[in-house]
Length: 525
Ligand code: UD1
Ligand code: MG
Image 1 (tube, rainbow, N blue to C red):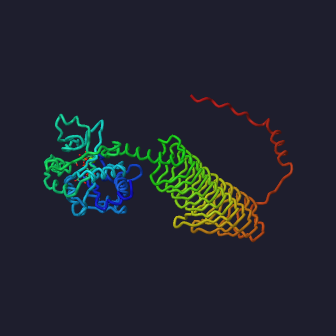
Image 2: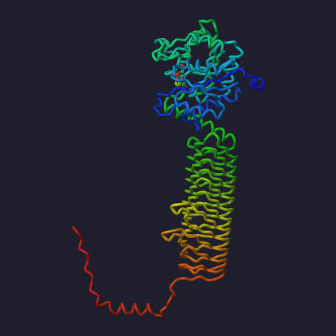
Image 3: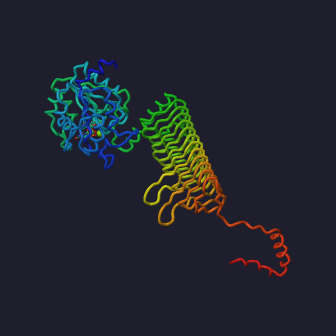
């Protein structure tokens, strides 16, 4: 479409009918507030209209008017309240003042989200160039039940729209349906609508009745058959919603594949509309990419992983069954399998977070690793550090959250618990080290300096400080500060008794004759 025509729509008002309840969905939520393809139904309709650059877009709201208004107002849609909802024709009349002096009106139902901008453009163009009073978007359906039917006059022109409840037995054969998407010449519509009477069992004013009135006024009504019937489909039932959702998901995946993304078993992969993915990234089956997730090039997202509002650099590998929420992974990060990143986690370049690790609001430095079974919360880990299996940062004392800092190149390789602690750089926290920070009354801090070596199975009873370069003997229970470069050892001294074991064995074998023989167990019956 050339710019000139796109620009010329300042004489058009778009009216979206969204006041109805949607009884057949059996829901406490107004119909247009249901989701399909990762957006609200009405959101899709508004987005299809925006590129038309009409003078204004108006939504008629009624059921849950506040929520529907809140959904569309960010898209610069004006709202009109229709209370009570006395039919589609009544909805038009209520909007008359808001429509103002627009020459043309495009009408759409808020529940037909698959409509495309190009189809609306074609409808509008046909209308403008034909001098018709109304142009109806129609579709030919194998099963037209539930829809109003188009009664053609001759060739292109329409005599009337007959609502389902008013069809004569002969008219039941008609399979061209009214999509409820129309283009009207405003002045002619207002004249006709003024004469519509609520002649139906619901006592409503039907917009569809204006069509036969236009005809009897000698006006022309045209019908334009939609290029794809599904564009006109409404969402009256949960099954309709699921069908529409499937179509949107398919469109999104097709777009991604055209843009160079590999998707295995595409029908199992669910991607929200705003997700962006770089070339040569691979999505394995059953992956879900939600919200504003952004993925770089050459990443692999393996099966079962769910990413919401995640940002991934290039060459990231997400192993199976990871959950990432509102977090950032820089290039070359490896995550999982079975890792969970809670909001505000940041994994710097080349970091590796492995099996059954949970991270919350923490930064893992460049090339650092937390490969197994850890919980890291409110923590800042420097670069090239190693957080061993089973390490737990205990950040909550029942009253407040407290931070942990682990210096660059430091290691805590196995089965540790680090709470309220500051670890300097290039230190080594041995297997099974526990910082004992709670005395039943209050939490106390532990400070571990630079280049400290803490032997395995050490208990550091806080408050306690280990100076730079200190050395703690394995199995110590450290209750006092250890100065820089000192050895801290706090355990019972070993005593070794030569030949003790051999002597004991001899004793025992010499006495064995006097041992009474055990009776065999009787089986219970
Ligand atoms: C309507 C058409 C029917 C068409 C079908 C297509 C009429 C009388 N019938 O029937 O010819 O085949 O759509 O889906 O128009 N609405 C309001 N205010 C109201 C009533 C409805 O805003 O007082 C809105 C609804 O929220 C909905 C749209 O208008 O978005 C259509 O109303 P709905 O009740 O779904 O009409 P249908 O019975 O589907
Ligand atoms: Mg409907």
